[in-house]
Image 1 (cartoon, rainbow, N blue to C red):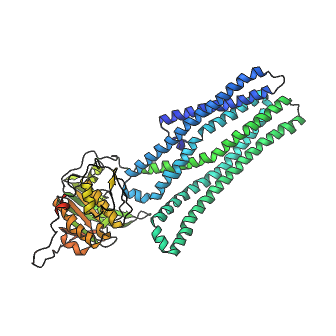
Image 2: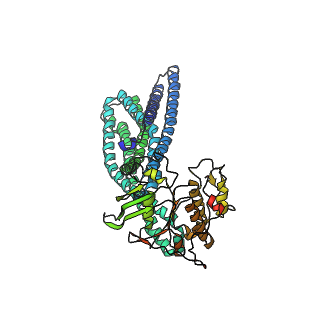
Image 3: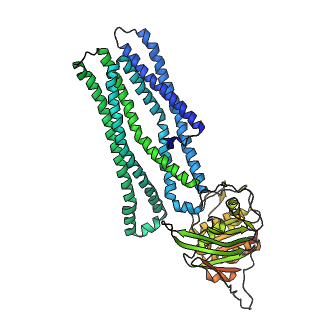
Length: 567
């Protein structure tokens, strides 16, 4: 159980101790109440002698139980809060390549299923303490009534504990297997939500996905968890049967061998019946603790896997990024993709590249040539396995990688648009937002209020324009666009290449554009082509207008030039 309690902070341990002590007080008060009731039933009993003690024990039982449950409610909720925040922080600090290898389904299962299971175990602590106190208090009272008969009870309990431990071993193994299938369930649910359009368009695929993936994983999870629960149910009812066997022995078998006073037999039967429910509750909570133990092990395994791979510099850069656009140099940078067996399947590089301020660079190439991988390397989301990246001559390493990243604004092909405009100050007083919306042809559909977009339920092209608005607000030295114009209509595609890129260039920004739009290649300062992971520079042929002059960017409008300033 050390994995389970390893999540507790010092304050949580204090709360746990208070909950345990008050729970024990409540349990012992309950046993003492039963002893008082048993004594009051013995003739001749004095009501005046017993009722003050009865009232006091009732108050102690209720008050202690209330305090214990009150404390543990906060303990359980604090545990959920702390675990989820800690896991989210560690996942956000995880390098992108490691997160992609882990997969979102596993992270989702840890943040939901496992955290909830651990929290539920902590909420059972008052009940466990109360029931343990009832059992030990009851045994003490039984020993006071008759030590000889107590040995029979203890013998039955020893048989029950040993048999339960044997059964629990097999049940726990089924729980571990069920938890592995739970990861698959979450992964397929994520696949279902992400690929619902494709599944709806292809009925055979949808049926196969539902039966072979979703249903199979859910059925396997259910089968293994059901097996574990059935074993636990057998163990619990076996324990209950032993208690009734003890009562039968005291009532019908022992009197054949020796005389047992009626008050002792009545007291034993009363206490054993009273102890039966707490013991049953203790046995029933063991599956919950076992499930929490499995989940705690999964969380610890995740954290252990993250600890060696997380970036040790934290979430914030150690200094502010440069406001001017620096020179970016890649020297013999290389990145490899490996299969599950560790063998190299694709190599990007070695890449030698220098990017200058106010330069527009197009990156072209076929699918799978490494364009997006190069973009991830440029912005610092992937770390090069060899070679070096320098920003104005400063080598980039783990100590300044977060500082390096803050120089980039990027809109990737599979971008995500947040509803909230996060990380910006004084948005309400920023008059440029309205200009952005107007010139991106979104003012009639989207407004910004209380730091959030009124809607992000738009077409993909419109969502990309909103993402461009966010990039304008960030006002970084480097801009990376991964097939940004692919979802735009011809008018906005022309605006993007001839006006937006021109406005960024005129402000000294370095712009990297991944594109297949060969009609606009002539607008680039440089055109780089990737083929099988190798980078080549291809000549840029400037188109000529009817007067023989080289065609370049149209002069950006005043409004587009202003976009981004003062943001």
